[in-house]
Image 1 (cartoon, rainbow, N blue to C red):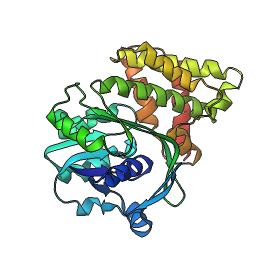
Image 2 (image 1 turned 135 degrees about the vertical axis):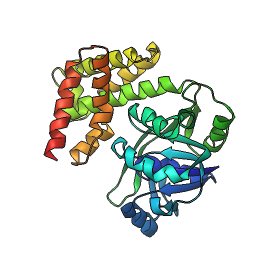
Image 3 (image 1 turned 60 degrees about the horizontal axis):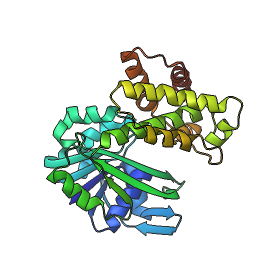
Length: 304
């Protein structure tokens, strides 16, 4: 299977590297700065098991040729419009596109551009970041990749995707209910991002602060009410596990949005929080805590 990995940051770099190591034909579509960095130093993975360096196949938008069987999109959500332009020449009659982005807005955006039958569901769970020299740092052993047809019909095309991904040295889940997995991932990451960005700290600091637990539970409840109104069929055991994970004061957690904010980078405020508010408004739901988070993030963006 010919695979194009759109992005070689922490997510794309890690999972693309694992696919390449498993023998898949993987090309990384990157911008000029990242291209030069990877050409010079290779794709460096720092994992709990040690350091590995790969010589990746690279392409830039101007040099992209031929169609790909699978395009995995791993850029930040605010870069989606540009990356759709970049990957367009690589989309052929049989190409499938699997976005691994935060939130859910990107699915409709990709479907509108490339067709509903081309876009499949995907998400990952990994604690990873880029180091100062562009190395991919996997901070914990967690490395899970979920994928499946958005309508649950995992036909022969999806079976081929599974055959390519399941042996790539990561934990894979070929799901026949990927939409619920996507809703639950959004519930987790938006709650985590909201409380960390609003409080400017990790979950351990928040939970050991006066009213910190009430803040977390309040944000969680607002988000759960929104996604349920939007079509999520609540799985009580799953949502309880998410809340339990977030509420453990012994485990300090932060979101990628919070880490980007503390470094002065652009953040996915509209895609992670803003989209939830649009959906809440559609159902006339009161979300005072999310409103406060949104104002906080918008002020940050104005001040950048």
